[in-house]
Length: 142
Image 1 (cartoon, rainbow, N blue to C red):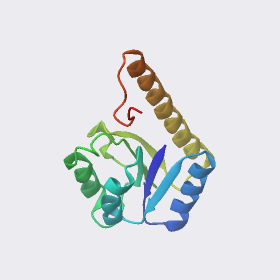
Image 2 (cartoon, rainbow, N blue to C red):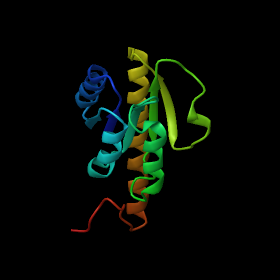
Image 3 (cartoon, rainbow, N blue to C red):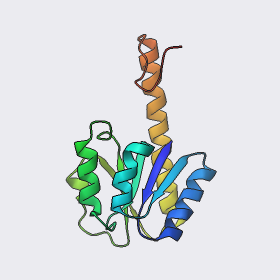
């Protein structure tokens, strides 16, 4: 799966990127909201993992980009934050989880499980479409 990781602490972002790479995922880092917004359409992630209080345009700006672009509006989002404050989780069904930062093994395991569930759902969907003689949008006929 393709994962974009956005936040301010480059060591945290690099650690998560390394963890995901070891699991076989492809990821990229955005150091702030502006980089995240600019990189979304270029990288086309399957999942966005973003610091809730990401600098420069904040999560509101990033979420607006996801909503406004039809090619991006299906990307699920996982937020991470130091404190479990009142979050936008209830406000937006695209936000599928919130992780506690700094990351401990348990939080990284939750992220791994989310990615595993997404891959399983994608495989089932692809199989169903193939059985009906249809191809997923990301497949091309030979």
